Image (cartoon, rainbow, N blue to C red; front, side):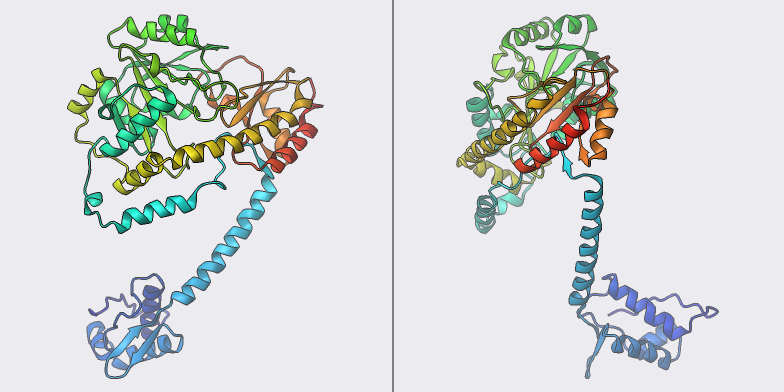
Length: 471
């Protein structure tokens, strides 16, 4: 152990031995002196600090009596293990934090109809743990090397096969880029498409994507929607370079774009060499009525669609693995301008996900979750039947939320506040608006993170709050 630097104040109110004692105690409690670490001898420390040896002995005696250090015959003084002490303190703090946090949560809301929450109670923890254990016990040192910038080839091959079978996406593993979340992939896309371009977005839309585009100095042009999605006629007038769309399940409106409108979008993109469509395949896995809707990319014959997807909603939010499929004409730009960016997903996580998908666990998990979400979806729709006279219900049969649009003139804030008074949290469509729009108040009701009985109880409280709301 090196001598210990302690700033002593000779003119202070505390005596010297007390200052030494408090300094060492604080170092131990903050983990700067570790359990089993040897302290300098009383003679050595006294000489280093230029104080009397008895002063250091008084400080050490106090630390000994309180259990912070121990004396070992013929060896010196050592820091005691305070793990149990710290663990008790930590557990106590955690219990208090949980108690007050839960109390505060209960005081605020009983039910939260968040459109972003998912059900984690059915996550296959055992299978995920088994795959992880098998990978780490293989002793494959290659997993700890840097890996390919686009992501491991095996995972990209598995993703390409999955996308082709489930979404009709036509691509090779070479066209896929793996990243930790869509934010990173959109950042790469900005390097490929360039800065200060004009991009069209639906209104309302996924607000986070809009904020990211604005950070690139993109000029955002909002395009109105009808029952079929983005209006292509307005898109043509806007004179933009790209359009960001969610054709399979638009967030937050839940609109599913029909094939006719998709063809119009593709024709618009074909008319300009530098025009591209950015397809965010949001919530495409969860559909409860009719056949699955193929991706927009599956109908692209001229390399105009940039396809984005993620496993965060289908597996777990902590699985920060997203993917982008680039048209071949943009792949060359990526390799020229982004070759030096490393993949942001660890190779261990990539291997785990690859085996989870490749060996069929993902498909089985997805089928199970569709069943659970369909049951919650049906319960919610059944509970909302008394609302049909005063609200228009839309966005059903897909995704993890539905929309209630009032037939009255009450503002959106009225519904949010009156629900909050009954300790129910709901969300307004206005949170997703890029530009102001004159429309009826619309509320989003998410059901992914709630149990069926919580849905019933929560809707009953909303019934009390809204059914008799004023004109």
